[in-house]
Image 1: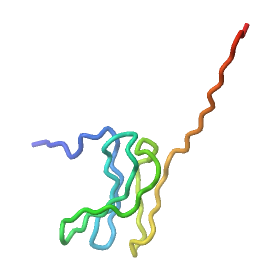
Image 2 (image 1 turned 180 degrees about the horizontal axis):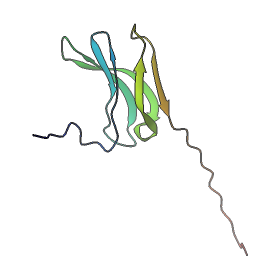
Image 3 (image 1 turned 90 degrees about the vertical axis):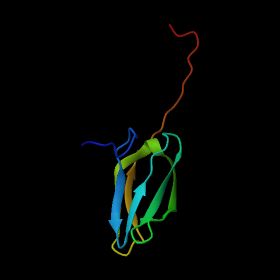
Length: 89
């Protein structure tokens, strides 16, 4: 029997630490990305680190140091310039 793990269009980003699973929950492309911690003993979820970028810029993949104090992840950096031309021939 098959069942869906996530309804999100984004692939999951997660990493295992000592006694915990760290992950980024995708709720919407423009919502801020936050690393959360799922405690394996208590099954409690709490936010750990707000990333300050929209979730759509987060690249799948997350790593955590053995002591759980450092995270490594990747994010797209997007810049755009808007230009307006008048009377262009």
